[in-house]
Length: 157
Image (cartoon, rainbow, N blue to C red):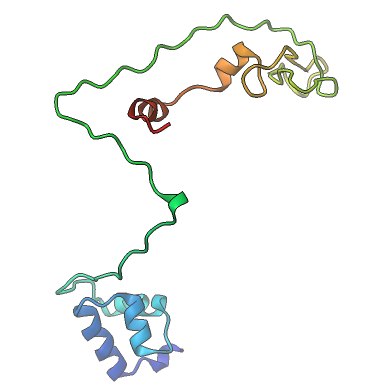
């Protein structure tokens, strides 16, 4: 629908429906031949920002079982929060690597050592225990976030 099809009657209908609290989608369906965005644009051009009654959106659909949100544990006033777990200090890994990109095998640490553009670039190469890294490099790569800690306290994970 082009801008010239906004007749005085249609603009009056739009204005009345907007002030009655109809949503832009509802107004577009009632008028026919216009999109929700066209209605929103016309509302802005007419300066119809205020409403006497707020928009009443349709009933919300229930989410499928797999998409339900995690429920948070209730917080009781005066209940102290548990402290974050202490940071485990792991001995720094040696700075010399034993594997190249070509020679690193499955189950070996892939922590990069040095600049990838240098000739001496290598990978750690020790046995991987945490994902793709050895224990010391895994401690550097995988750090718990406060949110993860709170979810564990609440028993969600």
